[in-house]
Length: 74
Image 1 (cartoon, rainbow, N blue to C red):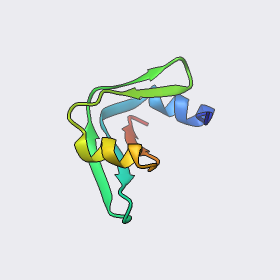
Image 2 (cartoon, rainbow, N blue to C red; image 1 turned 180 degrees about the vertical axis):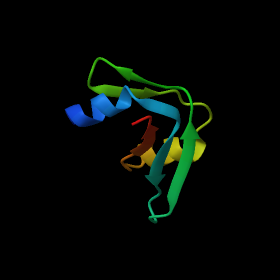
Image 3 (spheres, rainbow, N blue to C red; image 1 turned 180 degrees about the horizontal axis):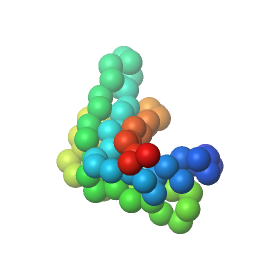
Image 4 (tube, rainbow, N blue to C red; image 1 turned 90 degrees about the vertical axis):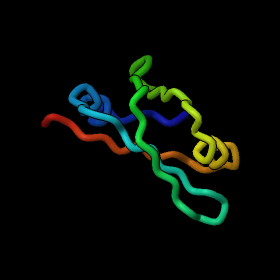
């Protein structure tokens, strides 16, 4: 399991607005979506609710990693 760096966990506490979740398909075509139902969990995980993320789910099931972008108040 990947460990989220402390700097990211600290920045998460200052997060504002939705986050962007990006994946790619098997051909390398990117897919990015806004996510509003997202929470930090257990100090080392970020949980995202799957609200009809058809392309995103398919990309992850095919082996794509995900990348999260968020904005902070700082």
